[in-house]
Image (cartoon, rainbow, N blue to C red):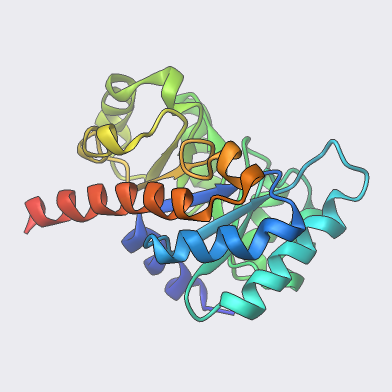
Length: 224
């Protein structure tokens, strides 16, 4: 597993986290390979809490991906709500823990295990609390509802805290979100297209991934 510093550096450099939710096991390799071919370097496998076996199932996907593709992509878990899920993800090879909320126990255990912590927050109070608890990056969620103007406003007094955006990010507005001051963003349905997963159209997923990574590359180029 990557060190905490190595993982955090890779996540910030990549900027894009691909969110894999409800991807069937028989489509997993096809989706992962398409994302990697499209330039994606960080994956988030979410816990599906509708399933009684979600911890075992998600840990299996993380372990398979980390073992097979770990030299090309960083693997993390998402929708992590409990310490048990954090520990299962760590045992499976995850380097990153993402949550939709601020849970001090989850943040603390993530950092104790040497993984990168990215809890979700909405208000300035939650953002500061998450940072104070040890979060490496605070996920602004739902960013699509909040909007770029909200991100700019909240980063005014809190610019010292690394923040990412999840929700509402598309290739055509990547530049707006990055200009607003986030260090990266997570993308689910806009990237891992449900229809393409269902039909096995991995070329479509690769093409969509390239749209995102090209937009990031263009933004980076402007910063040189």
